[in-house]
Image (cartoon, rainbow, N blue to C red; front, side, top):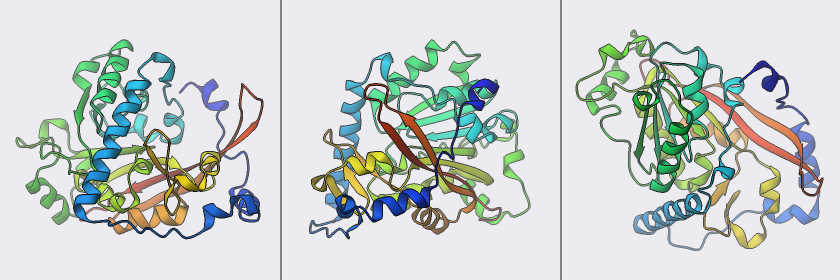
Amino acid sequence: MSQEAAANYYSKDFEWNQLRLEIETNPSFLYHLLPFIDDTNASTSASTADANSDSEAWNKFHTRHSTGKFFKERRYLLKEFPELASCRDYAKVLEVGCGNGSTALPILRAKENIVVYACDCSNEALDRAKENIAAANLISAEHRYHPFLCDISTSGFPEWLACSSCQERFCKSSMVDFCEVSCSEESSCCIGGVDLVTLIFTLSALPLRMMPTAIQECFSVLKPGGMLLFRDYGLYDMTMLRFDPKQRVGYREYRRSDGTRSYFFSLESTRDLFSSAGFTDLELEYCCVKSTNRRNGKLMRRVWVHGKFQRPKGS
């Protein structure tokens, strides 16, 4: 991100607690606060079918939005997560839920020798991402960008990211700083794990009950001392308040008309999810941004949760 772009980016336009007070005292928003009673059978087979339905919904989403108009590079990431530019040479990044490449592209721009492994549950999304990366004409992008199909809500990451023996070695060693291991020291059976994981507006697309498994998967392939960079929808974001009662599928969980879903995180729920997987939180806060709808001139109050989590050494 250029200095000019960074100067025009804000994340503290209003206080989240003031917004919370407004929402929780407004009777028209009461249904968002009520407990949710799920009378469906959450069996393993039902969960798998639900996850497959979610993947298909996202595939259709990316098919509908395949034009360049939908693509918007997330340049703010380099300001929010400077680790993407300051990491060691040849650092390996795993981007979970790469979509159309809007996150991978600024990461690849940030450092000429950074390597990005990007996965998504949608083949259509992976195709769009490859097209967008290729169109950017980045230095050696074909050797630094490695997309692959993976749905972490139904299956784990492939062994070539971090094999079982490497994962066991991660857990046993508390002395080695694996994030300083160069690419020449990779294992012959896998790439030896990754230095950074990004979860940018991905976790909210999963059913809440599947989030702990997904986070644990991220933990398992991250080198001890490595970091997970998180950004997603925050509690009382304007998009949450637009959902009607019939679109609720859980507590703070909603399903859009196109079949895709969204969950809205509080700081507490985010901390609980990541700490349960073994992560230590380094940063965790709400980003509160005001913007104006260009079509109708209405003020929009956006809320996102920003977090940085580390895998401790010897874990």
